[in-house]
Length: 343
Picture (cartoon, rainbow, N blue to C red):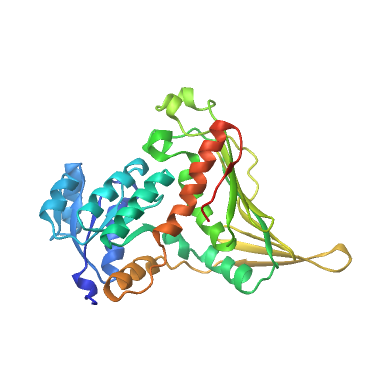
């Protein structure tokens, strides 16, 4: 039975000042046709800001109170990474649909717990992978997957970072954030998994700690100085992802995709295609990536809840980058590659 989009009552857990994400999510949900009704935020000053941004909204100091008193149907969780699973489970057990800000969670077991609870109760569970619709990956999928301009994808190399000490915010805490790979790294992995659609075989992780830690607020709990993950797939394909806070070799950063017929490189703004020419020459094509379409995320969620449209960012899809990073963390600590049976 279909429902009207405006009857989907939405709320957020977390209205902190960083990036003003609470307001952003509610505005995007409203633009998709849903109705903002509730905000949960522990900081009274931020609750006051929410009430100014949305004069008719209900504000709560605790999730338990919001779940008890509010008629909210769909809740988006915008809190530190290590709280996602606990808060999502509380919402699901209270019969609410859930959107988790990325990353979905920190550990594979947490993802599995959430998925079991959502299936048990017939609820929607998804992750805010709005960058699934970044212009750079939309263009890359068009060129690499659909047009096959570089032939079969063989490997993908992702690299980002610089030379800087982690800041004092919670994203610099390993226990809270998951690590250096759990922020932009999750986006990069989500990009890559759109380009290599193969079964994963094993994951290897590498990490270095201790350069910045003595000087930071978090000390031994500081995120890695430098970390890398290598994923081996079936059919002789692999990808690696490196993020660093000690990298002074600031060559063009981004994602390089090597295929059987050439190479495709891209970052958020542009792309390059290098194909072999005659007499060892190269054919080089440069272009600008199109604009992104982040509005498709909540439009798809609203269509899924109101009309039964297929959900694009399923929890199974969102858990794949987390599984990779979880195994990479285990591998870095144990010193060897770890096999996986999760596709």
